[in-house]
Every structure is written in structure tokens, then in C-alpha cells.
Image (cartoon, rainbow, N blue to C red; front, side):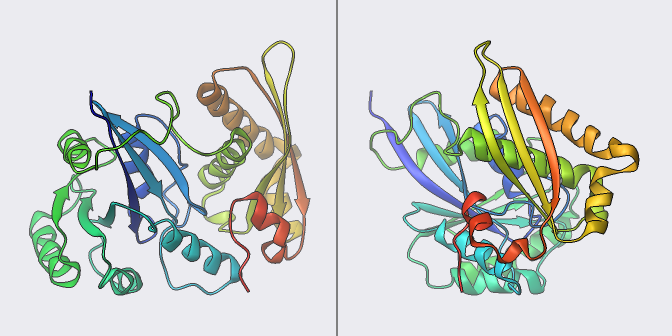
Length: 297
């Protein structure tokens, strides 16, 4: 039986639903999600299988006009994720339409040699007339080879979209074993799951002022996993927010992250969280290395 395998780069503005789409195509969580924009910080690979075809999906951070060093590193990771792609998927929030956030993406996609497919996401909650106008305008800018209307959250249009993606992949051996769904290490996944809970439980209280480092990841003799993590914040007030009254908020974050990790790893998890104030952590080269970003001047 002939095998097919290709690389698909998933790009778009922050909060377009890229990670939700990648998770849905893979069939399980490989990238963290939250309603907060710029949840994805680094490039994450998800591996989807359709028949004899393997689709390697490169989930990238949302592209925006960067300010801080961290922003620049995230945008750099996004564009780096498109290199060597057989197809670039431009994922657009069908509700949000075209705004200033889309401009750097559209400009970056002009004159690209790769095939560009347009995916209008969140069509279940988008106004149909606005959707058609948006599609016309996007076709004028990037001339996509294919256009799809989906809802990554509900699954609308995804089976047909996945079949079409698989049929467009070139012939060749699979890049990953059949049972591998991501290139992320368990250490990195553990840090990402805890960061996801920070976003879910703290909402606007702690915008992007935190990072999670996995300091220790040990497999115990009974098959369970012991994980020690450090949550970095820039100010003592942020540490107090994460801890909550009597440390209750941190316990809730740890409990939810532990349960999610146990489900993903398939083993019992012992998770120990520590909150550390580290002023200027987003200017620390070692932190960038740990969260999978390149340090850029």
C-alpha cells in the first residue's frame, strides 16, 4: 500500500482557533487552547492520520505586530513554522473579519511559493453574509487554491476538510510512527498544560506575565510520574494572584493540571508547583530555551 505524507503549516491571527483546529484533526490534545489570544507561544507539531496518509500539522503562534522580545520570538517561530510546508493553511476567524491584525499575515503570505488554503473557522457563530464578503476580500489578497468553511469547536466541515488535506499530500514514507501524535516532549507538554490552567483560571488577572518551567520530570518505580514545576512571574503582586487566599488558587490550578496530564499521559501524576518572582523573566535567554523559542536580539 502506497503511503503519503506531507507538512501543513497552520497560520493566522491570534485567537483564530488554530490550536483547536489542529487538536480536532489529530483527534486529541497536542496544543493548549484558551479564549485568550496568543496562547500558543512556540511551534507545536501535531500528527493526523487519514487512511494511508500522515498529515504533519505545524501549529504556530498567532502572527501579530511584535513589540517585546517575547512577541518577536513568537512571530519568528510562526513564520519559521511555514518553511518546507507543502500547504500553508490560513485560518481566519469567520466572526472577526479583516482588521489590522490580519495585515501583517496577508503581507507575509503575498508571493509565497507554497500552496495556500483558506480556512474560515467559527462558521457556526459567524453571520453568513459577512462570511461571503470576507471570503471575497481574502481571495483578492492571497488567491487561495482551496477554501473551506469549518467550525473546529463543533466539528462542522472537518471530515470533508481532513479528507481533502489527505488527498493533497505527496507520496512518501511517514515522518512519525503510527502511535505518535506530537513532537513535543512530555516535559514541555507538562509545562504547557499548567500554563493552560493559568489562563483558564486567572483570565484577565494575569495576561502574559507568566511562564512555566518543568524543573524535574521523573518516572517512579510504580509507573507514575513526579513533576516539579516553577511558575515565573515578574512581580510579587502577580505571585499573590496565583497563590490566592491561603494558597487555594494554586491548589486548584495544580489539581486541574494534574488531572489533564494524567489523562494525556495515561499514568498517575504527582505535580508540585512553586511560584517564583523573577523580574525580567521575559528577557532571560534560558527561559526562552525551556519554552522552545529562539532568543532574538
